Each structure stands twice: as C-alpha cells, then as structure tokens.
Length: 434
Image 1 (cartoon, rainbow, N blue to C red):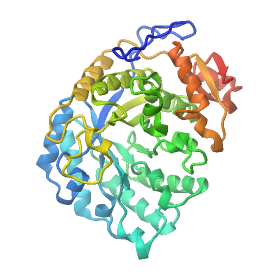
Image 2 (image 1 turned 90 degrees about the horizontal axis):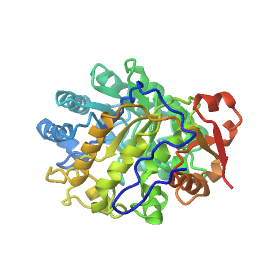
Image 3 (image 1 turned 180 degrees about the vertical axis):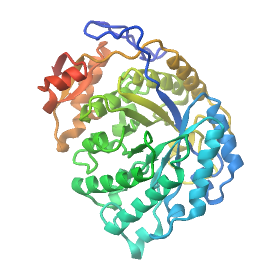
Image 4 (image 1 turned 135 degrees about the vertical axis):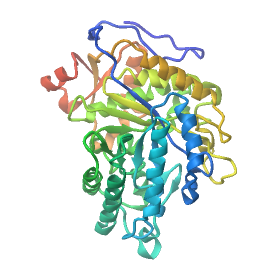
C-alpha cells in the first residue's frame, strides 16, 4: 500500500497507482471537465441588479474568461424578478438575458439560478411571501405555482441562447427551511414541480438542476435529503464547504480532511444516485478566511481541483466566487469579504493564478481517472446521516483510508449485496466500518 506524504509545503493532491485500481486503456481521453466560477458582481454585489450596467458586467466577465474558465453561474434576485405573485418583470428578465449574451461574447457558458432566495447569508423574499401576506415558499400551493411560473418564464427567455448550460431552481434553497417548515414529502413535491417547470422551456442537452447546502448530506433528519439531491434533476450538485460541521477548524486548513473534502463529497453523492454514472457537479467550493488562511488558499485550490478531478463521475468544479465583496458594504460575515478570485478593485489574487494553472494542467491530462475498486460501506439512516459528515465515524474512516493511499468509493449498505450495481461502478472490494 502506498502512503502519500503530507506536509505543510506539499498539499496532499495525487496518488500513484495501487494494487486493485482498475487500469484504463491509455487511449481513453480524460472526460471534458468543466471549470468555472460563481459570478459575484464587483460593483455593488447582487444589489447591482437594481441598476444593471452591461459594461461593468463585461469588464468582470472578461477578467473571468482571462483565467481560462469556461462558465459562470449567475443569480438574479427573486424580489426584482417577481415583485408580485402574478407579475414577472420583463425588464428584469431582459437584464438576465443580456448578461448571458455578454458572457457568450467573451467565451463563457452560463448556468442560471432562478429563485434567489439565499445568497451569502442574506435571504431575498418578495413581499408577497412575507408579513401580512406570509406564505410558506415550500408548501403553499400558490407560492409553488408562482415560482414555477418564474422558472418557465426564464427557461423560455433563455433556452435559445447556445451558451446556456441550463436552469437551476435556486441557490441552496434548503437555507430557507428555518422560516418555512417543511417535511421530506413536501420537499419532494416542491422539487418535482419546479424541476418540471424549469425543463419546459429548455432545449435538449440543457440541464435542469437544484442545489442544497451540506445539511442535506450531513444533517440528521434535515428535510432536504441526499436522495433528493442525487436523484432529482439532470445532475447532482454538491457544495462541500470547509466550514460545514467545522471541518477546517476541526482538522486544520492543510489537513487531508480539508484537501479531499470536495473529492469525498463527490463520492458520497455518487453513492446516493440510482444511476452509477450520474454526473456530480462540485458547484460551490472556496477558500473562506480564516478557515483557510490566505497564504494557504492557492495550495488548497490546487489540491481541491486535482483531487476532485480523480472522481470518475465529476462533471466539473465551479469556484465560489469571482470577486470579493467590497468592504463599503455592511453586515456580511467576515469570510464573505475575501472569497473572490479577484479583489474588490478587480485585481487577480494568488488563488486565481493557482486555479488557472491547475486547470491548464488538468486539461492536458492524457487519460481518464481510474475507477475506484475499493469502497467503504455507509450504513446510516436519515436520523444518523451526520456519521458521514466531518467529525462523524464514517467520514473519519474514509479519510483514514485515503491517507493510507486507498482511493475509496462510497457504497450505501442497501446496495452492498447488489453485484450488478457494484460491477457497474467497478467495485471489487468492500470495507465496512469497525
């Protein structure tokens, strides 16, 4: 067994082949991985939608394209798009279309999130969902239909744009659960209804997706479930943040637990899918200070990309985020101010250079990643899924194996005896937690 060396100077990023890894023919090309960034406008953050300036957007997107990234994820604000339950503002939709067109002009594809919803610790609700007019956004039939109407409108307005990747329901909608109580069954109905609406206007090959923050994977009895994330929509999206379950503080910013977190999240998501080949999109990951100190951010970015790229189901990685929040804006958590690849003056940061270099290297890789022939069996219930999160017994056993040089897949206990399923994933050996 090969054991990788960890040190403060050399992040744990790659392993040599080990016995049991199934080889791939040398002529197999590496899958075309997508690398992008979540777009946070430099001037005015998302409040810039109130007075959208195309030339400011063009400047930002040109900087992003200059890093060699191929796509962005964009967010309009729900109250501006749909200020009344039966009113969708044409001018706001037109702003979004214009941004997608500007992205095309600089060579970027675009994923559009529809219902915002939650962004960087702020929640944006239209007034028709609040106060005297309060409606639970997940369970009220008229609120659900209004959101479906918005997604249909966005799909029909955007679908003919050749650079549109697709339409996502919204950003981490499960962040809204605290003020909108909901059951698992109600979440399933909500997601099914909105995904169907999103798909209505899209063309073949465009994606309809949804996203959730890590409570969906690690939170005991959270109403958004791993199954919903891994089985609804065209791809599975994961947001493996190092502050979730205090991962970076628990293990250290240069620890293998941190540097392999996106890889682990991808493998965990693959286990919950019914289709063994279902793509997984690392849709948000970033280097939040102080969890990842600024000097460690470039190494963290390199290791995160390289480790995730060795998952056979990976669709791509979309970094959070493009530009720092300007400190003239108040009331953000401290970590939100420094997450950008560019600072608030538009200057490249060292992490941007590290990402650009690593992406260039990955695109030149000669062969695809090897299937993982060894898997660690995950046996948990909705009430005990925290075992698979940072600090949990399963998580720590997976990371122990990873540090020893094993590249473990994840298999759910209920699939551990399914020989056809295991064969489809290339799994030949199962390990069970002590």
